[in-house]
Length: 252
Image (cartoon, rainbow, N blue to C red; front, side, top):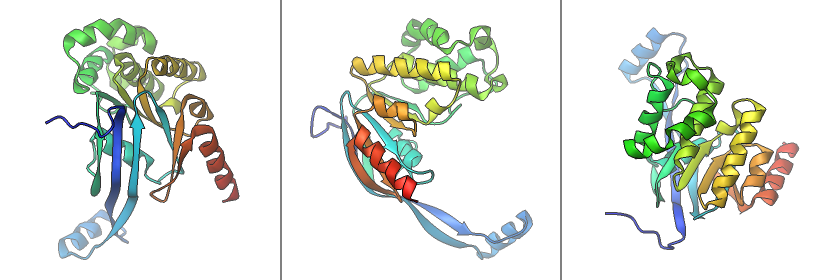
């Protein structure tokens, strides 16, 4: 049964999300010792709380940045929203087709060509072959990969994979785009090209949830959600929240 949001303008809801991971206090010097201690049940397991009671909603057409120091749970949050991870408690729901661009090369088959990976990734996102065929030229042109599109992805540099992954995500134009630090990869000219494309998609009413520390993202986004130690510290206008976050980091 299709979920319906409380507000018809809402496209993404995160409600009271807590995420805990198991952390082992290993203290061993070799793989052999690790295996022996695991067999004897001599490994201490602790719970690491990554996110704590995180809640927010995003309306159609909003662009929201998630900011915070490394390791505070930003990427974990996007994985929960995309459905890759299930939270320990709480829930996240999206109302519309999503394009998750969460990790460089995620979902790519290294032995397949760039062309084959376009069809594979877009199919995973829920698009039909007919829909992909209609966008294939646009994807290839935006990626600027030229004849390398027919080469195996395992031969690509990180920048080439970033170009391909980003080109697929933004060309398919899903209602909701989830982007995790991908804009920091690649040369400056391509980064600017990506920002320009995102601005065009914003004008079309698409919705964005972006993890990034880039000041350029501040200009692209309406809101910013600042996460610290798993909690939402601030959720407000992007310029103000970025400024408060920067000031706090300078004091540390």
